[in-house]
Image (tube, rainbow over all chains, first blue to last red; front, side):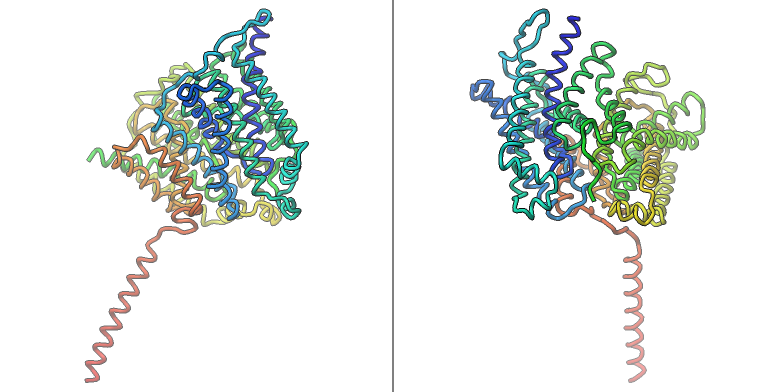
Amino acid sequence: MRLFLQQLATGISIGSVYALLAVGYALVFSVFNFSNFGFGSIMMLGTFAAFYAIPLLKLPLAVGIILAMIVAGIASIIMELTVYRPMRQKNALKLYLMIAALGMNTFIPNFCIQIFGGGVRAFPSEWAKSVMTIGSIAIPRADILAAVLSIIMLALLWTFLYKTRIGLGIRASSFDSNTAELMGINVNFVAVIIFMLSGAAAGLAGCFYGMKYSVYPNMGTVAMKGFVASTVGGLGSLPGAVVSGLLLGLLETMISSYVSTTYRDLVAYGLLVIVLIFLPNGLLGKGIHDKL
Amino acid sequence: MGYIEGIMISTCINIVCVCGLTLLTGYVGLFSMGHACFVCIGAYVSAILTKYFGIPYGLALILGGSVAALSSIIIGYPTLRGKLSADCFAIATLGFSEAVRIILSNINHPYVGGALGISGIPHKTGLLQAIVIAIISIFFIYNYTRSQHGKIALAIRDHADASELIGVNIFREKLKVLMISAFFCGVGGGMMAHYYTYMVPNTFGAVMSTNLLTAVVLGGISSVTGPVLASIVLTATPELLRFMSNWRLAIYGFVLIVMMRIRPEGLLGHKELSLRPLLNLYHKLRSKKINTTANISSKKGGN
């Protein structure tokens, strides 16, 4: 029982990281109908900003995390303005957008390996490393922080999307971006907001991942699990992304503790294939068929 | 001589793999992030067949390719049916290639060898065999794209709904192209295994997939000779630019972004490299020469 509770806590904390990443994918997909595969490198850039700023500027952890979110948000906006928007305006095939995204996912981490070195580093926070004991289980503070802050971030996001005027515009654009534009919604502005939000989610997730494991230029590959979670939950569906992110985290920790740690990474992709065979629209998805 | 020969053989191997991928990416417009797994499956199957079962080289290559093609159904069936978003296919290929790599690294059967891979594979890929197989695959893919199948593939890429309305079975066509591309990658993998004579599962990672995709994108989508030319250039250039080999992947990524922004159809998009313009030029020059000599002789005659 103790082992189970311990794994449950670990699963929820890694699951909340996946949920944040999945929400980032889902936000972009819901409006533009394409997946930003360059997301992992955004997450990495944000984490590296916190990694260097916290010891150099003697920032407290909270400020470091906010800085990571801001940097990741800006990186995401730059990506949208320099690459995605010009291509969208040329009505490029979706294939071209995906290739460009993969290009960024190759370029940015390898560039950073040459600049910063490819080594694995520890996230510079002693506070987050200490372990708290609740009842019979021991939880690192980073895990609690990850779960709590993710929930806060998701709640803020939900309020923003459903209670504000800009959020209404975003939802209208995600329903039909052409009609929304005709109704006077500035879709380009919506795009900037969307990319900023998804970048901020990525920065936050990157910090938690860095605290839980380590910081290294290729850490962006974990964002692929976020993408799996967003596909399993139904592409473009925010609640689906959160649910399946948590589900994926729980499944992974349970399987690595009760079955085998070797096949931990197979869980995500196995789940993806099974869900796609039996529920092609994902757990909570509306239709994810390519639109006409 | 051995060095140049080595580069030529690895170029030929790359050409075979790129031939498969260009059909999938360039013609049907499916984006694969993990085609290295088919190279991996082909390499393992053909290496085990020749090393432990004594099956002849050519047959082993074909069998390796066929197993790769069959395994592609595992990702093709769930992700290509029912007009699912192309993103599902991309992520499934990535996941499948990771899965293949993890499983192969953890099987401790003596035939497979786990993370240590297979060594002592008979060296069978010579320069002649490599060039012949490369030419056969270019010939096959070139003719496939010129045939009705190639036209159907282009129709699916450019307008899936319209092509479905005129009676194209999109699922079947996509699956067919996926299997063909996996077959060629598998054959390329078999050639690779019998050239290097050893392999480990980690060779077939994301780096190899990116290299293949870069060749296709740089050479030109909807072209066969373009990617072939690009894979020759991309295999030869790293050898010349050894001193900056660390930057290679960063440069490849940058090239992908810039190509997509400036010229998404690639250097030779929608065109094939052929000798025809040269022949035309030659004929033009020749006819000019004949005309001028004719003029001169007629002038002479007039005088």
